[in-house]
Image (cartoon, rainbow, N blue to C red; front, top):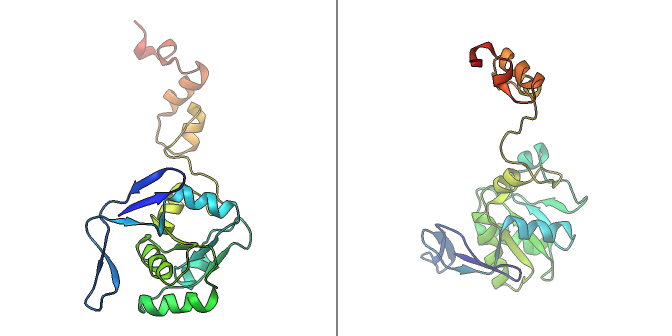
Length: 192
């Protein structure tokens, strides 16, 4: 599937294509096709932070109560999508939100959110999007308060490496600290 946004053009979502099942309803499978109902994480975050779209967390109530996106305040709601049918879930959304509602549908992986957004768009809900990557992708890139996560481990000094539990030899760490990273200046084994 390709995702089109006003900002960056088409974005390819690997391994997902829209097809119909026996009843003619839309469902997801392998391959790719265009969907206006999907947004990348960064695009969704911009809409969410601008307070223009409500974050609809499709995970279970228990998962939502344990951890959910908290900022901006009062912009997140839990509408669990359980093992029931997509039609029942979309019916629940139609009862809770008017057709002009602006929603970001976020399930655990992103697939059900995009599928629900496609069904809602067909019913006239034009401001509804599924978030590619879902809640798992959101937490990989952002904290629950919306701050961007820094990838990798950054250790500034030898003492900090010891505190972080990286398993660094204390002699090496203290040497690094004392000589500003020039290990060969004080380790006897490195002297000529």
